[in-house]
Image (cartoon, rainbow, N blue to C red):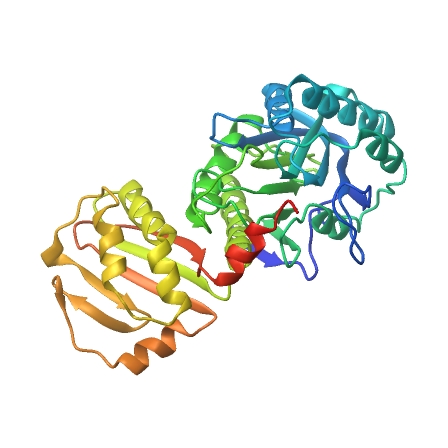
Length: 405
């Protein structure tokens, strides 16, 4: 069966048929030029829906409410704000989240229990609900609104993160789109982000959950910026079936290409998140190969990319490869030192566990690139995994020392 996945120029979360979005400024976060901080994403038709949420035990009000509603596997819309996390706000925060969904439900003519909610920003503050109520009425929903939604969910992000791909498989075609935000408090276990994915494909709800988990495991769960997580993480996908295809199930011939396309969308958004880390100047890509199992490869790669010492060395273009080996050694994975091979770009610095002579200037040049590839071969099996992160700069400290002031 012939199949193709092609990127859509200027694609976004409203590229799939039947999705609309819009955003406005509600005064939730500090005003700057063209600031947006409140948005809505909705479908013209009911959707199968699935989501993954923060793994922390402290969960924000929007997460608590959305988790409960998604037990049905159905959703039509999501309302989201930036500038206030609505986390650690108790029952009043949950009441505010519930009211936001009720207001949007009336706007898009859908039951309130089909509307989800997400928030991002400072923890421990209540939403300015008078402003939210007034501002929701100002939001105009349209098929180009995904671009504004991508901007409305930004906090310390320096760029909007959005993508869409067109998929053709046999006689069928459909689209998958998405937007994400994330710049700080990013770490494996869903990282700290909001991501909204849409597709006009008809997808069985059970398969949709499985596909999302697989895609997140190799993308958002493989990025780290600073080792911290938040109470607000959410990756949501909605499928409205308006492409008119036969519902895709786990046994369908189309399941493989749908998974490939979803993996591609999530990986692009995850890498964009890592590249946009607070104060970051470089994207770091750590590949661990030759591991005994995939889970071990993933664990080692995530440990290395999360290491503050590795990140600081790369920021300073210091080929201090011992920090990489030390991180691998404490990762808890099975390894044999005498079998290790380590590459900085194409420069091999360790072979059979022993250091090799190398041109320091060549290694420094690799570390001074916008994207720094690190490859560690364990030579114990066939499993491989890649994790993405960023360097650690003085600007990260500056941003986070002034975040709430």
